[in-house]
Amino acid sequence: MGICLVKCSGLLILHVLLLCMAMNKSTGLTPDGAALLSFRMAVASSDGVIFQWRPEDPNPCNWTGVVCDPKTKRVISLKLASHKLSGFIAPELGKLDQLKTLILSDNNLYGTIPSELGNCSQLQGMFLQRNYLSGVIPYELGNLLELEMLDVSSNSLSGNIPTSLGNLDKLAILNVSSNFLIGPVPSDGVLSKFSETSFVGNRGLCGKQVNVICKDDNAEPGTNSESTSSGQNQMRRKYSGRLLISASATVGALLLVALMCFWGCFLYKRFGKNDKKGLAKDVGRGASVVMFHGDLPYSSKDIMKKLETLNEEHIIGSGGFGTVYRLAMDDGNVFALKNIVKINEGFDHFFERELEILGSLKHRYLVNLRGYCNSPTSKLLIYDYLSGGSLDEALHERSEQLDWDTRLNIILGAAKGLAYLHHDCSPRIIHRDIKSSNILLDGNLDARVSDFGLAKLLDDDKSHITTIVAGTFGYLAPEYMQSGRATEKTDVYSFGVLVLEVLSGKRPTDASFIEKGLNIVGWLNFLVTENRQREIVDPQCEGVQSETLDSLLRLAIQCVSSSPDDRPTMHRVVQFFESEVMTPCPSDFDDSNSD
Image (cartoon, rainbow, N blue to C red; front, side, top):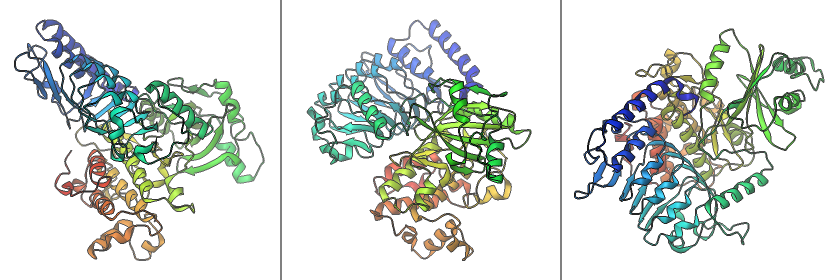
């Protein structure tokens, strides 16, 4: 579970030990029941439903969410949608060889889809949509010859669509949309009959089903593992090593910090000295390098040597916490190096606490942090370099405008990243500085939430409140500016402002608003009273769809409500966005904000 769960690991281990003892005492529990208990142990948290399962029962047939055959007492259905399950899917579910329906949608499950599910030979429906699952679609799912419905949409799945799915002659419904799948869509067998709607939202797919010509017409999708490797090699060649995107469930966080970095840059900028090694010339003195998972194939000496070459010419950005440099290694890999200056005596404790969080965060929509090195005067953090720059730059500083679909994709990525911080971390995290400059874009213009320097753990499990004031004017919720009390709902407000910024192409405190005594939220409220809310959209944006725009405006209006209680959770935001914005239809969103 990573460092993020260290504080609760003791309780979890105790829970598992007690569960195992109960299992040992209960010799009468059926094998199906034992498999479900393994699933229960793999779930770190939920709304409590599966913790009501009792190991001492002779069979699991009376457990909530479980349906058995009345004669054989074998499990034929597992239905646990929308129960806030957080954890991974235990491979032991593959032992339920009589299972016909598996519904785990609308939860916070992460990790990979177990290949062992290919052993559930009687399975007719598998619904895993709207989770945080990563990795590839298992090739073994092609063994489920009775399968009629497969929905794994709205996750973080990568790689190729396995050709084995073409063997599923009974498959009537297929939905793999809104993932990170790449390569040709197989036309083998039953897969040839599915239309673009089954695959939408995977920018790397090509083929006749998605009306995108593959660059290599001779390319044939092979086994899932082979084609995944091929697709990843193509991605690496395309971006020449500049873009490193993690597609596995274990996204390690590594950070890098060095002595005297800030003073070298400060002297260079203040006095104009042309000292190429001024940034970190004393980096070797007292600096310690920490690497959590060994993701960087470099020695400390290699990294230190590169730090000494950085100067003002390598600066690619700056912010409230420091300057960002472009760090190019000898093998062609490029990283973003963020210099953080020691600001007060209490910062070290704050920084070390933050490292515990950052070291365990793993999600497709978060910027991947690689390593850190600590010194008495300054710190450097090393991130994956994202070639698309920041959303702020893309919206306000470039001549090429973002089209409508791209803007929607960016909003969805930012929402998923923030939803992960709010709902899938334990303890949960408030970002506290959501803004366009903290949303970075990769080469495909997919969004990543960055800069957790202001994030704080939610220590109070009931109030979910932290009281260190931070953030950027224009994005701050009114109650936060008044009280300094940051909650998940203040993040939601900032996200709503971000949505309006993407829609309008204007910064929250654009000069045209200030002249009228308004900000972007005030402008929206004025347009709503005039029934002119559609006028908020950027006139330079191409491909705007009126129904999609109306749904997105309803979402934004809810997010920037003056009452925190009226704002949806980020988990609900993602659900609404995918069901109503990406597929416009009449909505009951206004009546169902609860999560």
